[in-house]
Image 1 (cartoon, one colour):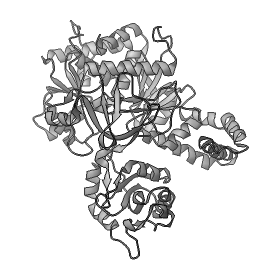
Image 2: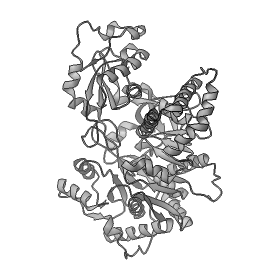
Image 3: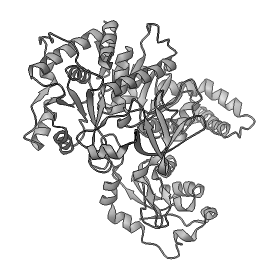
Image 4: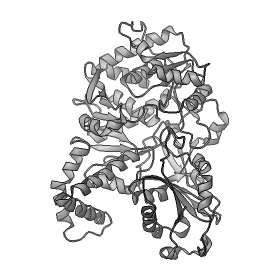
Length: 576
């Protein structure tokens, strides 16, 4: 059975159970499995009347909603290749992707989204809006048989385009089916459910990440396959309240949200003060010492007090009492943040993968000790190894067949049966992987040192509350400098660097910084659709400010004059 057949069979079994719900004005709007199947049949009938051919592309442009899910399933069931697009992205960027894949039709959640595309691209293909498709009284499709085969391209998901143009990643039905089997099995482990038995209780899952991203889409499909109750957030400003109302067993996250949650807890307790703050801060220190193997007398008492009086309250207010684990992907999570949630008794299971690997290569094993800073072992049936330049290469049933209409780009990354990820990594003796950074982001100093900027940026951010982004630069220069965004003073930036620099080799120390008041964002063109830095564009837009950081002050030693054991004697970073 293809993954679509499996999902539809699961929905048939679920019947009148609620499998999807949207949060609207603080209230849940539910949809049963039977109702979702009915919506899919109505959408299939609408699409069939358009006389589309198997393999035609259907651009799906909408915000997260239950109708998004129904339209996605309907288009795939009709043999179309779905091209999901990010509704917040600039229309010109969306048009560029659609011109590349040439969709036969656009399915839009709202008329205003279609209008924005047509304004930029008057020759856009015909569009349909959800309100028209799902109008009451539409007849369902007469012959709902599926014609999807394992080798068919189910979707084309465009990469984020951190440098260069986004590329359309083709994923086959076989890729998707294989991955859903692996993700469902891992969640069975987490929930301690025997897959041979009928699940008596649904998993409750909260979901806020855009469904157009590969990992988010795989999670949504996995929930449908498992008959879960999936709560969709439709307003990012209400995530905290809706998360608590959903009371999830687990949900998918990106590091940015978990790091904001950690900082919010610290700030709230500082405002509260008194005994809760005393217990929390002392227990936090005891927890860190325990992880470092430096426990002191009395640490156990403070941790015991916190586990009875403080930590349960934090857990309940932050997420609810049912949570089994947080699942985190898209970028490496800082060790500090992962340890924070572990201290509260909340496991954080990391996932690593790319769109080209059907979103996932590795997953933390719920039955094995979680190693902070690592993303678990390769999933069953997938091979991974470190190749030249410490690059991670992967092969297995999850590897995409190629980029849409880009055979040369495909040939660059698919070589001798292995997919070259472009990520630098390392693996420990137990097979747990750590992602160091992107090879294309490497900074090569004039001295010849190769430096991954991401770990340094994370260290600085961890010491700099109030900062939003840190971007380390210095390619071809004598030393590293940084752009820092957010409402944060120069004194605080300097203090953070004074804490971080002594623990780094001389060539990895940041010697100067420039404050940028406005954070890098999707709207100002300096973040990709899934929140990654467009480093080349940032470097170009702030070329003058970066050049200014390299106007060396008098008496500042050159990078080559500093030895690795002189870190504490380094001159302070200068503010440009």
